[in-house]
Image (tube, rainbow, N blue to C red; front, side, top):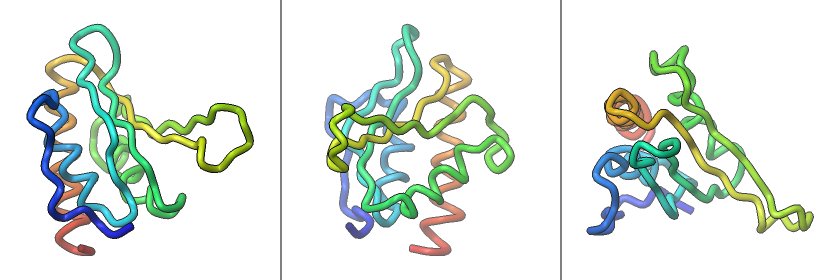
Length: 120
């Protein structure tokens, strides 16, 4: 899967998720499928599919606090326990508060600047 250059956020998307989803969809091999800002009740979540594990490296790099300056973000993987590779799902999660929303925008800007421009 190539980068989704013409991806546009759905009209009903939580505005706090837009910048990070746009940036993720510009990374080669990744496509977001769902998102939720948490609405003050749970973590900031964005679900995605990946062509392969290597496609996740740039995203995981910028989620790491050593590179973004924001700690508490993580890339998560799960399966439905069927042993079917198609059941593997990825999502990122982060804090649900005004600071977390600001961090999402800043991580998105890093991805856009450092990954998409230099490697896209």
